[in-house]
Image 1 (cartoon, rainbow, N blue to C red):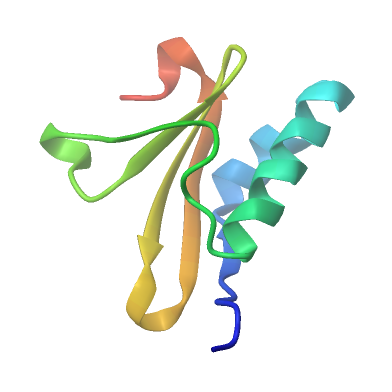
Image 2 (image 1 turned 90 degrees about the horizontal axis):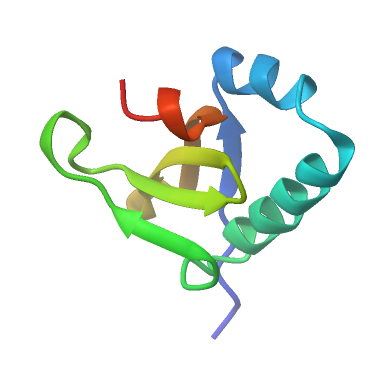
Length: 90
């Protein structure tokens, strides 16, 4: 059976946030997004969110948070937000 492949897409807001991160944090996020592309959603500090963000997941990388959705039917991961802890859930 072929290994699953997911397309990882960043929203414009997530792209802007990514560009402003320090290079070491960007490198860690790049590694995580590579894992997402291979269909690996088990490594890292990932939890399912509740309330208004039900259906989204959160991954913690240091002080940064990635809020994303996995669409298995379309093999897509949409990273909707990349921010610090304080702004991640607003």
